[in-house]
Image (cartoon, rainbow, N blue to C red; front, side):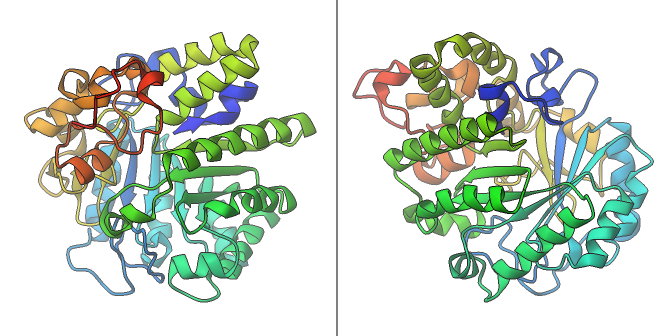
Length: 397
């Protein structure tokens, strides 16, 4: 996750102290010194929508093997004991889990920041108030287009209007809320409209996600945008971030799942705003790039632990059988061992890239989906061979 506003404008937001703190450097088992990783918990696979890019391949049905309430409470205890700084409830649709509010309330006994990733369609005024009262610090609502474009992507007519109503219900009662937007071929031309929406609706935060080829998203490889479009998207995001800052609008803008973004941003800043470049370089080095399996992990609805939510083809252990902290520190699995020190394993463009210290090999799930090699190069890196300092003939593996 790249704090575009932080890098360009020097803003301070909650996640910045995890992404850009000196205490994060050199850690192999957590987000910062003395902390465990940020955990995304797919607490249920059941969902009321059927999005075409869903990495969890969710649907509107009950799935066998979901952690029971007692098992979930024990898991939360383990996260508290491991000093996990952030727990993100995801799905499926988390609000479809009947004991959701019980679990959130229970987690309040630990000093964990509790956040929610949701499609937003179930957040009426009552649910919005309950989210705030129970202590959810942030609600991220997915919108992948405007109006009918979002509805096609989400597989249900009216999903956009209901999600927007959910956002408004949160804003009305002071529940912090933001947008999650996954860039792809079907909505690339609506980026400007998304910026217009967050300004008109006074939405304080937006995360622009790059497509990861996992779950149903693995069928969307041909629906990803081109490298040229990725560069144009970053140019727009940079420009709009600076415009908002100039207007005095307090908006947090982030990009997610492609660390080529931070290198591209740095190169553009060196060209356009050189006085800011040294500070950005300092923050880039502290962050260190992708930290799946280090500062960021995933637990699915059955209790299986994974390096991140897009790499569920590799299971490191199960919280029904072992303590989460023990699983996370265990390097007997070759993928987990590799992720904690991946630089010597990376191949092709990633292995030779001069920006490796600030990217850390980008996203392994995309690399494996295209090359068949977990340590191959991420095909979504849109930087040229010249920009990354490798010979023209170097490819993905």
